[in-house]
Length: 276
Length: 87
Image (cartoon, rainbow over all chains, first blue to last red; front, side, top):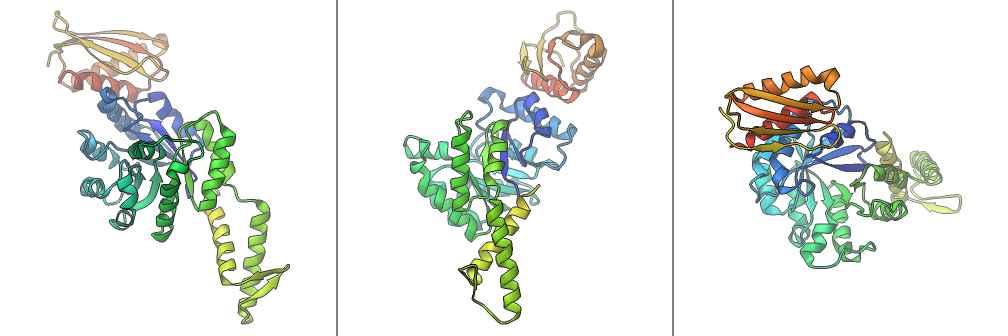
């Protein structure tokens, strides 16, 4: 399971090259906001040649394509159909844009819906069910707050509803929940706190906009070893009790039943999937 | 195909190359290269630029390049982008 998704502007030859050796679990080559309008086509050309030539080893590669209503959309999707690319990040994901993407994207590719409009938020139930190619939801806090005409704050109360709604839909439809970037690249403490907060809501991963954020994200997503140890004890004890026909029992003063067991098991599985 | 206007692609950042294509009244392909690795890789870089131009049917141009350590695929991509901008 990917913990971090690092944006790399597809116009930057040096950054594409260095992305091969960075610690991020997944790389998102950005053809959209990270590339100036007059560099869009040359960025795509550079990305195509880089994908043909470079070996990204075990990195999961995504391409953030341009908006479905832009002139670049079709060629961007064709670029993302490259065998080394895992899938696309679909900006301004709404029913119409997802429909357009599904028409041209290779069926073997996955889609991460970037939820960054009010309409995208209220269309979450449909977006989650439109195609099995949709594997994740990614929150775009900056564009969403712009779309709502509100100021983006570090506290994030303005995106709170969308953040919680997104993770709930991701859980309901078994999709990855990926949180919005933390834009202050110097504030590692703030990033760490935000990662811990969104992880407590159920988020699986966070987007990074700078390579230095990746390590902070990975550290913050690590499960407390004591909690992991306790979870292993619960699972072991519950499975032993279950063979003897016991469904509820006391372990070190705490009541253990099926939901507690499942939560502990989920924690262990999540940690195992996250361990690279 | 002749180059009829001045177009540019690439940057002067590390691992990149800035390619400028201009019309050449002489009617030939002329490549001027500045590179941080000119002594080591100058011939190879010029060969890549020339073959990329020829593969796109360019028969006449003045190609000025400032290389900052670009790999082969970056050189090809930047030359191709400069050609695309002619269209």
